[in-house]
Image 1 (spheres, one colour):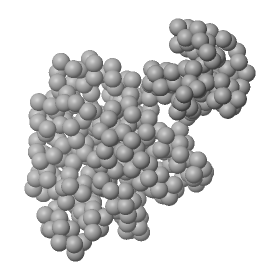
Image 2 (tube, rainbow, N blue to C red; image 1 turned 180 degrees about the vertical axis):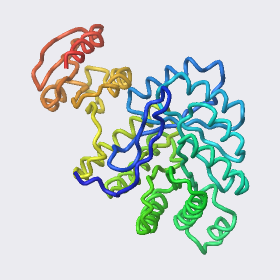
Image 3 (tube, rainbow, N blue to C red; image 1 turned 90 degrees about the horizontal axis):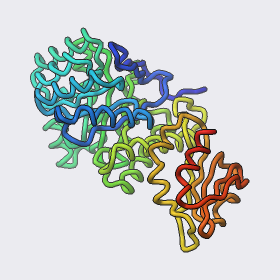
Image 4 (cartoon, rainbow, N blue to C red; image 1 turned 180 degrees about the horizontal axis):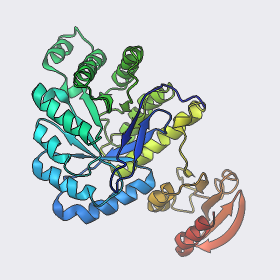
Length: 374
């Protein structure tokens, strides 16, 4: 299959007990999210359990904000407990980056423009290179260099161009020190700037043979509905052009919903660009009706209870959660397993044929039994 844009492959993890994730090349697009709370030493066991759940749902990489040395050490302890590659997001203090690399932390995200002098950046790159730890050059519209910010504010330079110029500066900086294992991201809170910036950088760097992997996403995209809409518009446009090797759907919502949104965006892009094989991910396809006055079954409550488990299924199956006999077995007859309500009863069906009629109280347990048979 055609894989879209050609990039080098960057290996993240793959040392000690940490699972290897490959980004770029012909590898599948990796979904990632960011831990929403400040990590404390007392949270390590619960955080490790949450990481295992997120991994089962399709998260390939998890990033943590690391504002100080103590946070670096806490994240280091967590990294020793889990197999998922963890990334440290660092600003302003190069010593935090150096400390993170004393632990099995698999990746750094830095902005070289705010990490300190060239000598401090060199120390970070040298230690990362010695430990085979990749770095993401993370450029945001809110943290542009002062001279470019001034031009944007004056109207003499648009934001997308400023993002690209900033990224090009940082890439040149890494090349100056001979550091090759890097990814790049340029994020804005607007759809157009996100799309245009990534297209422009690909045009300029690919023509020079750089071919570095791109992390794409819309930053500060907003609450669930608005954020999913904005990310879908931007990411689908880029992914269907073969641009993007790893994604994060930034939402003012849960990590679980960021992963689910990322999976659904990739699924939509794969339908639109079936020749780009990197977009294809295995997993469940959930269809459910919106509910109306005919509803005989609480589709919303049932769907919310089962969402995490359904997205943890590594099988290409379709599950239907329908509200009534009108939108039940007939409209969802292609489903491998479906559930709906009729009066005070609940119906389970496969491929349009009702297989069991049960009570509401039995719905979850019987659904689970049938799901495990698939």
